[in-house]
Length: 120
Image 1 (tube, one colour):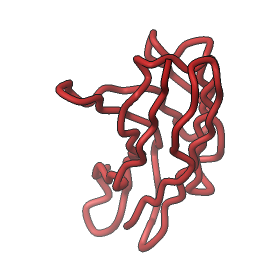
Image 2 (cartoon, rainbow, N blue to C red):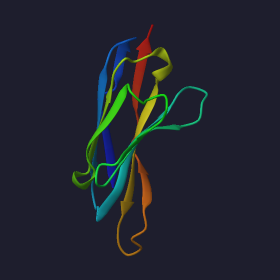
Image 3 (tube, rainbow, N blue to C red):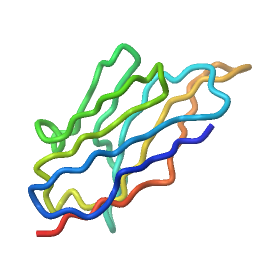
Image 4 (tube, rainbow, N blue to C red):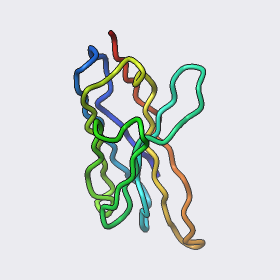
């Protein structure tokens, strides 16, 4: 299973970026897809997640500025980021909880990450 992210880049504070993530490979079912980020010297943290049925959850820092969309059943998720701040600078990782035979228990899969740089 592979997660391929795209859409990172550099932007000035106040700007917007849209990240995309597509899962491919041998996939029986994906339970959830989401976005995490890791800034230099900090731990990886949740940004937003989406379950099948499109239930979404956001970190406090993302609430009101970021929107997760897409369709977990279609193995695709997006992150629209607006009103970006320098503190949002980080490598953003796509994450998916994937079920496959014979165990059918969710296994976490990670993308390679895409860098988002916000300048002041």
